[in-house]
Image 1: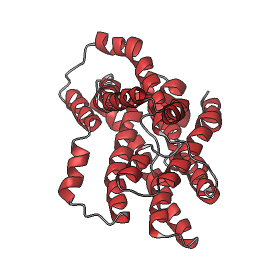
Image 2 (image 1 turned 90 degrees about the horizontal axis):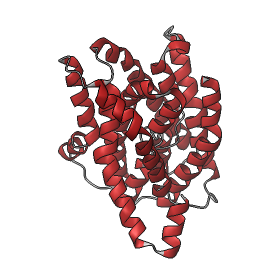
Image 3 (image 1 turned 90 degrees about the vertical axis):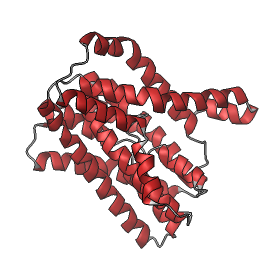
Image 4 (image 1 turned 45 degrees about the vertical axis):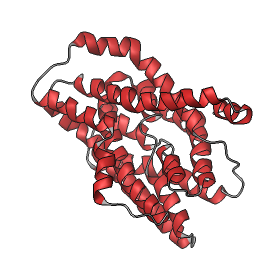
Length: 298
């Protein structure tokens, strides 16, 4: 975040180009690599199917927070654009750039496979509903074909499909490749992703956004994990021994997705509102929420 401020204040163009390249590198190399190697470290399809409960919890968390945000915004008599901003930022969390590093740091590399399923499910919904709603708010026409193209051309989705094909046909990735990825690439990749998060989020004054910050913060940091945990208990699952369930809980408390800011910028929505929500809730997540969750997990 400090780099973003320095770049803007002193107009360091080279830094802007460097981070644009880093973003392309993250989308086309880092995320697909993390998804592929995290998933293929498990060689049996039934193990991956079991991790599918993470996908279920992700969908439930997104749906509950989305509906709650729309209802609260409706009661507050917000306009259409504000309601969409509240819904997108309450429902869709930062499951990749911040979520993957958080899961790795708290639970270790073995938890990245269920995290990948959770992230790809939520991320795909974020692309579909985020693009559709932002387009609607901007009164722009969006065809089903163009929407499908956005999803199917996302590299991490291809990586997950490739990994599942490997597992389905019992084609093993050499253990030396997975070990090398864990030893030499995971930490640098996640460090770059965290750096990219800080640069992508604009610094915005919180004045005038206290109600939106409070509502989205409560939904993201309290309602979302409570719903996830209650579902785990309701299904009678053993939380203490399952990395899949723990990864789901960690991802359920992530702050709003940076992708929402990109949507706001591309569709000329309220950049300051989106930026304030993502910026300040990301700070709260990193310095308050994640330490609490890490203590709870240990």
